[in-house]
Image 1 (cartoon, helix red, strand yellow):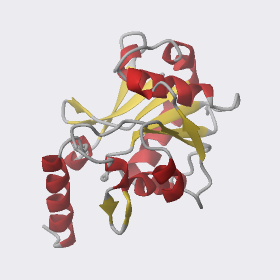
Image 2: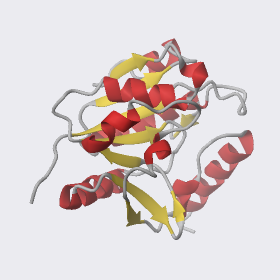
Image 3: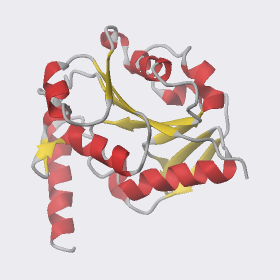
Amino acid sequence: MAVHQPVAGIVLAAGESRRFGQPKQLLEWNGRPLIRVVVERALQADLSPVIVVVGATVEPIQAALADMPVEIIVNPRWQEGVATSVVCGIKALPEQVGAALFLLSDQPFVSVDLIRALVEKHARTLAPIVAPFVGERRANPVLFDRITFPALRQIRGDVGGRAVFDQYSVLALPWSDERILLDIDQPADWEQARKMKRRACRGE
């Protein structure tokens, strides 16, 4: 069975969190900045290398990750849309990388188990794209095989990797934890995430 290794992690953290009103990458989650939590899980899942693309908030994120074995890439064109961060991340990858998993910096419920399941699904199938699905709803993070990298380098605007979904087949990874559908765009989302965490702590 052919297996592309290693699988890199690209954390997209360049946005300015305009709708939230403050850098959501630095919100505290379990006593640590949210960006650090996401990076920790990428590292624990053995993604290598782990690349963090920053833009609107550079120095505070660098400080939050100062002791972690990651590569921080500054996207000078972050205001042009998330596609520019995707391109920055792809261009920073070493040649030997077989696939890249794109993680968002505002998803506190993405687990090590989910990341590993996506990597294992790709290793068994070498599918161009592997994405988690909760029922019929696609979620993040999404894994892209290296065959998609040339197309990802060409995307533009405020669209992420889904810009190439019509060019490649997407293999679904069924996932039961609906919390991965939540990302933090507004203060109400953050409050919902905190409520979900409290319920989990109580075993509900």
